[in-house]
Length: 199
Image: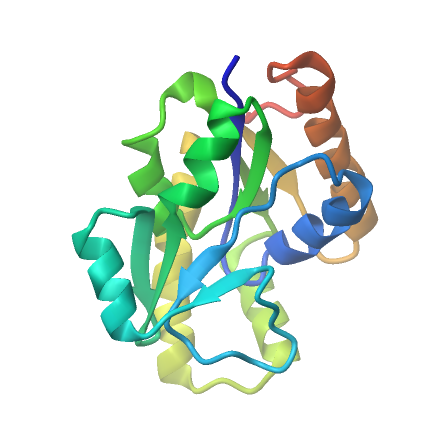
């Protein structure tokens, strides 16, 4: 039996990365694929999480159709190598991948529905998200406007998700528990048990 690819999507600042990091410790049996990127390595980055490529190397991989999905953000390329996904699916493993909505749309066109699950992390209205963003760092109005436009597009993808994890400010522990329960259900049953269906 082939495995499943679980995509965790949601607006920037919704807490996707925090939820992923939680289950890396709790559910090590999941497969966590690496992404490829052309951005510079940061202090906390690890080669376990990223393949750091030059723009030329990345473009060559695009031309050779080696990515399941790829996109450009902030002047850098990001992509999911097929080599990180297909072997795990063939081995029957459950793969967990944080991804932007743009990439999720591409994957929906390529991976059969029976092998794909999408979990949307919803952290609230734009006003609530804007407050979160401003709390983390000062941001010019022009950049905030771009974030708003992107948020509107991303929130529109929520209806395409199989499950929504609510993660508003002050409810992080509840979100973590719901996220963990959802993933444990997949691992235990071999199919998706409807714990938190989209309304």
